[in-house]
Image (cartoon, rainbow over all chains, first blue to last red; front, top):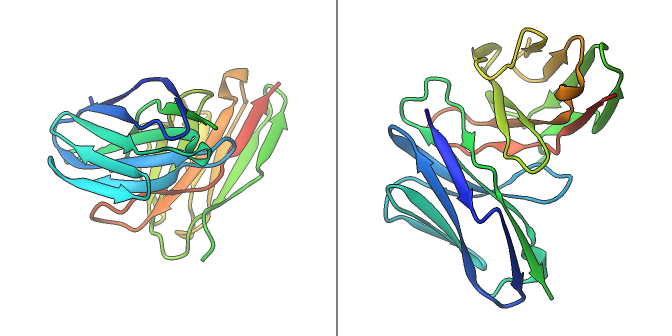
Amino acid sequence: EDQVTQSPEALRLQEGESSSLNCSYTVSGLRGLFWYRQDPGKGPEFLFTLYSAGEEKEKERLKATLTKKESFLHITAPKPEDSATYLCAVRAVDNYGQNFVFGPGTRLSVLP
Amino acid sequence: GAGVSQTPSNKVTEKGKYVELRCDPISGHTALYWYRQSLGQGPEFLIYFQGTGAADDSGLPNDRFFAVRPEGSVSTLKIQRTERGDSAVYLCASSFTGGNSPLHFGNGTRLTVT
């Protein structure tokens, strides 16, 4: 069964204090790993797709990396507006249903 | 362009009642998904449509839950004999088919069963 875990569950940072969020996954074959941002009362907003180990994607203060077992979302010099829940999801090669399996998320708070 | 639209944004119903939740996907997206999200949890898969047909309904928790997409666009999630445990945010997402097209989500319907 495809599984996704995320750590930490919650993270509080001071503005400008860089850190990383972890997403660990277990799938029989990875088709893609997806990062989303979710603000309170909103649906998840797509950030990145990673396909293979060693791949990296960047967007503003965020950089996502991928290994064979996990992905990291690095946040450099965060600002209060980066506060949100960050979700990762996997899509497996052998998933006939094509569905995306989500992790529980990391709640990030960036304090001014 | 317009994103995924879900109505109503909030629904309060009494235990035992029937509810319908509507999703209007992004134009041109052939794949449509329903997820359920409880407080502090990630989205949990319910059902996936490819066009008009349900390609995977393995996430529907029991036979009180049913979804349709009769014309391959708008979808309705139907819940019969609602229970308090059905209270959650119901999210709809759509995408292009094939490859690794990401899901694009609506803002959800918050269902509260009293």
